[in-house]
Image (cartoon, rainbow, N blue to C red; front, top):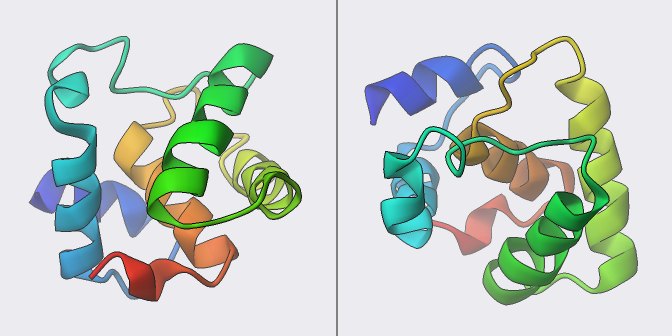
Length: 103
């Protein structure tokens, strides 16, 4: 859990540990595989999966709000070649004001 928090701290000062734990639980076994533990920000299908999965189901966002949040996160993380899924999801929740729904 602390590895995820350390990665998130590269982008935001205060990390909500309960929210990180909630995201890790949501992702489950996907985090065990190197490929599925990362988000490909250049793959439209991957971003649609984030929008229709995590953003809609866990955060309750509509497509427009999710797309706007995803765009913000992609821009924020553009210098990082390895966009960890937990970090991406955390920053998405933070960008859309839905972090409170996680923990």
